[in-house]
Length: 267
Image (cartoon, rainbow, N blue to C red; front, side, top):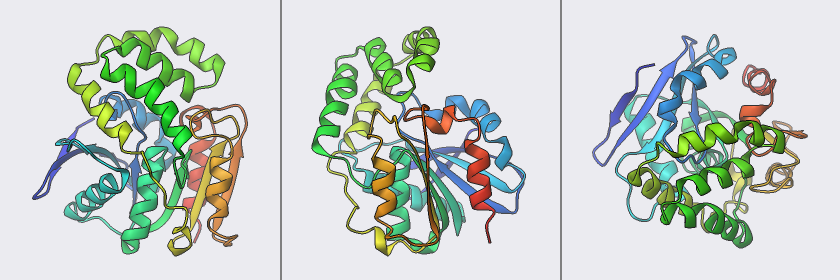
C-alpha cells in the first residue's frame, strides 16, 4: 500500500487510499501509539466491503505537531488537507478521537461533509475520563514505559478475551516504539482535554450514524446514546449499540463495515 503525503502551506500529512468508487469516504482513525500508516494493508483488508462504492482515504495526523494540539485544531488541519487534495463533499467516518474530529469538521465546514458515521465517539470528554487517560496512557508514555502503555491501551480498547489473545502481540509491538512516537502520542492524547461540542450538535446538518458498544471502557457505554440524543431525535440520525465488543468495536464487530455501508448507501 503506497503512503502518500499532502502538503499545505503550514504542515504535511500522510494518508493512503484504496477503492475505485465514484464517491469519496474519508476515515479519521482514533488515537494510536504508532501511526496507522504502518497498518495500511490490514485496514484496507478490513474495509474491503466499502471499496466498491467508495474511493477511501485514510488520514494520519499532521507530521509537525505543535506542543499543544487540541482536537479542534486536529479537525481544522485535516479539513485543510482534504481541501488541498481537492476533496469534498465527502462521507466521513471518525473512530473515537477521529469521531470527535469529524464532529468539529461537520460543525465548522458543513459544505465538506455530506454524511457521517461516528464510531465509539463522544460529544465531550469529562474531567474523570481525561484523568483516567492521563493516568493510564499519558503517564507511562511520558515515562517511556511502552509495554505498560500498550497493555493499558489494549485492556481499555478490547473485550477481555480479545485482550488476552492479543497480549503477546501488544508486547511485541511495544518493543518497536520509538521515543518520538511516545512524544507524539502524549501530544495527541492530551488533545482531548476539555473537548466539548455537546451544545452545538443541533447545528450539524448532514445525516449521522452513531455506533457504539455498551461495554465501552474508555468513554463509557452511555457515550454513544448521549451523543445521539444531542441530535434531538432527527429522523436522519441513527443509533446502533453493540454488546460485548468493547471500545474498539470498529475493529472487533464482524458486521461493522456492512452496517456502515448500508447507511452510507442511503439516498
